Image (cartoon, rainbow, N blue to C red):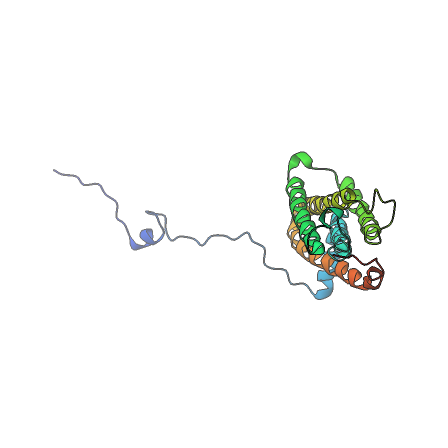
Length: 225
């Protein structure tokens, strides 16, 4: 006598993805439903997030305000003695300064993302505040203030741009990287989304100040090609 042992496969078991397990249950979602906020509640939430980052988002804002108060208008209102023999020396100066800024801003951003070059929150805010000095140094260069071996010398103009560009990339990257980690997990997404807005607003404010200072810049000595 032959005995056949088998299992009957029903349509329910096929649809459930298994045998004898019954109908498949829908997955349970743990995602929270989107929270609807009024404009006032949103602004209050943003204000709270700004204050909760230990001042890093304010430092990020300040970095870009300082940068665009002087760059590019004031930074290009100068010249290098080494370029005087070239035709259209002012054009070569702009190209050189743009290149220096791009290179060292990139170097600063790269170093800001490396753990070995990480610094504390207080040091970051101090670094952002010290960048105010660049407003003075670039205007001293533009007005060709003495002594001749310093503010009007080639070495100082180039070095000033190198430190200016490096600090812009380095400090801003540290602010952007560290800011989300200073708040509770539920607010990190909002802080991260605010970084781009802060940078854009800082550029706008800095450029607005630069336009307002145009009459001052027009008082600088003329630069001959």
